[in-house]
Image 1 (spheres, helix red, strand yellow):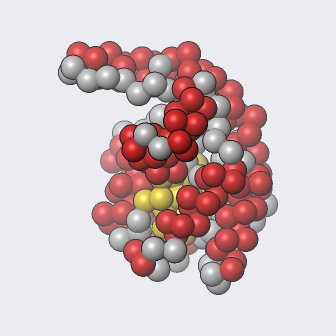
Image 2: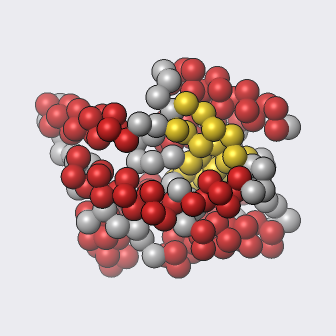
Length: 195
């Protein structure tokens, strides 16, 4: 089963992807994690990606699609995957559909985690405070101003994907503001109905 977790930054996609990995045995394909690995390695691609993310902008489709295709062909994706943070635009969705079709696969379900943007901004401000209090260094893109920009970019570029997948009857909307355990149960119920 191929699942997309959909929602704005801070909606809990990463948390729920980890749960799905543990409970359903599907690897989490997080473009964010893949791109962060390139940044941490200090590669030329990583430096370019770091500068783009620090401004709150999106990385080019070619870079992201190449990373996803390479990762999806790994043996642990044989039964499917949980896409976390991808696709973010209609061209990426079309490229993902084409990539999967070449492999005789498709997106089965799109889980939309619906959240309140104002609460998301408060959560990021709190996370930054907690990270600093714990002696850590916040991510370069983890601040309220950048989040506001990312939410704008999400609204312009990513939200239209709901319509794209909605026309295919694949979108299941979950209240992302509910407690984590409730969100987890709601996702499980939506996936079990899909089988």
